[in-house]
Length: 281
Ligand code: PAF
Image (tube, rainbow, N blue to C red; front, side, top):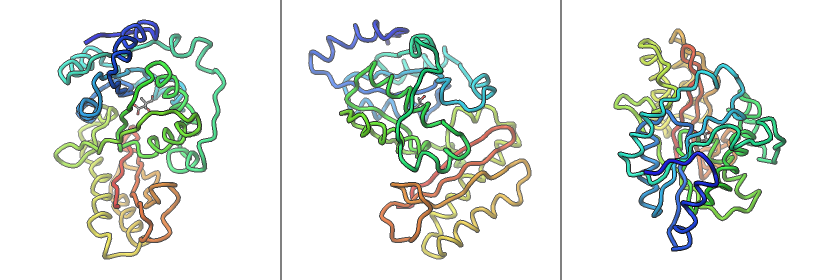
């Protein structure tokens, strides 16, 4: 497995591969890899010939500087996992490589109304930062396909909107959420959970599963109310939102007949903010 720190070195590696017709996949990450990321690498291998994983903790998508500071960076462990998974190349630039004129460089694109809903309400400017770095990574790699996890459901939607904005010919593949045996969605942030938090965090997947299992029995309003009530009794967990939304717009679902419905949740568990979702249909 090759490791590249500059766009130039990455390009020199990719150029002959592209010229010989190889299909390139990009798996963008911020490191602190877990089996959810590895599932992206595996799916990438089914869809392309050469797999590039990027590891870059992107400063422009963090609204809280403390969150950026404490973001885990276990690089040796990450590289070992990627090598095991059969990744071909890792792109690990530093901030100056991705933001040569500083990370406060100008970037603003229209991502549609959904940018300001859900996560957008709690993390102002987050999706501008995400799409800014993903565009830079797409420009550096020019992949045929790029893989993203369904856990960041809204992120996938924003990236697809960015793609249409720039008319980029990249196929976005969304990979299902990978969960621990007890249902907790895998996340790089789980490392920050105390033993008590780890137990309390199960309320996210349980409340979502309740909605999926009982979808036919209750109205949308009742489902949301009952799911939110899961959080009333758990100390140390604060619900930011629980919503059943139209999967295309992320607006609150108006009817059970919409063709795409997803339940999404975000909660503060101890000092860690977690998100999760389940697609209903
Ligand atoms: O999902 C992530 O890890 C990040 O938001 C991404 C897509 C790598 C951009 O920094």
